[in-house]
Each structure stands twice: as structure tokens, then as C-alpha cells.
Image (tube, rainbow, N blue to C red; front, side, top):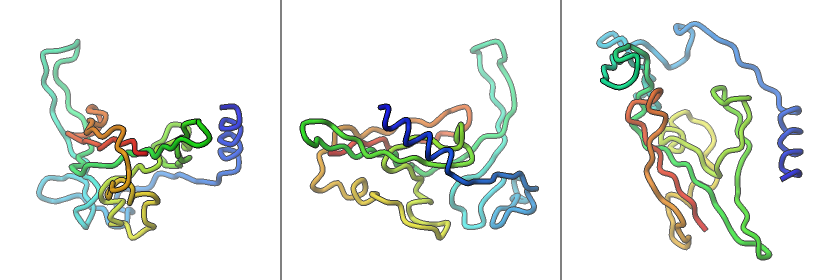
Length: 164
């Protein structure tokens, strides 16, 4: 674990990134839909930002309004694992994203929404994705749909997998 922590700390120090807020109207390919005022991508992919009203009989605050991310696609969170020299190894990645706590985080082998792995953004393909879409030749240790942070995502689910 010490070697991993040293590698991760070095990577954090050497990584270059810049994040800056911009006005909504400056965003390329995103717009506010006139029919419902939700923020959407011009291709209808990725997600939308919508407003919801919550009413509950649980907790101190029982009614409120908030923005929420509506991303109806099922993402893939997958870890490849293998026993080498009698020891189980896990293929993970250091992933940098603006929404991550501390920007850089240790992440699964594959962490991608459907829009991302189908390359709606026009970017690079998702490395190791083929293991999770075509599982022939792999042993599935774990495969389960789980919900994503319900306070931030509307009915969002991810397929969590571990394969040998």
C-alpha cells in the first residue's frame, strides 16, 4: 500500500489541470430547453439538469426544491482482477475529473456512462471496456445494478462488475 500511496501522491503533484467557471451561455453544445427550462446537451446524450420538488414524511425538512441530474443511462463501474504469483491483483486507474474530491481519485478499471463509452463526445474509446461488454472468457465475480447518489441523481443506476 505504501508504494501505491507514493505513486498516487507523485501523480497528484505532477498533474496539470485548470478548472474555471463559465456562464451557461458560453457552454458549447449545451442549452436551456425552452419547453421545460432544463439544461440539455444538443445531441440528447449525457444528462440533463432539472428541477424537482420533494415532499416526504421523513426527517425535519419535509418539503424542498432542488436541481437534480437526470442521467437515464446505465453506467459501467468495473474492476478487472487476476491472481498473479498467488496474490490477487486489481487493475485500477487514477482518474482526474472536475467533480472528484481532490480532483484525482483511485477509480475502477472502467468507469463510464453509456454516452461516454459510445463516444458521444467524440473523444477516445474507453480502455478495457470490451471485457465488460463481452464477458466471454471471463469469470464474473460480481454483477449488480446499484443506484447512484439519490440526492444528486434522479433514478440513476450503474452496473457494478468484477471480472477475472
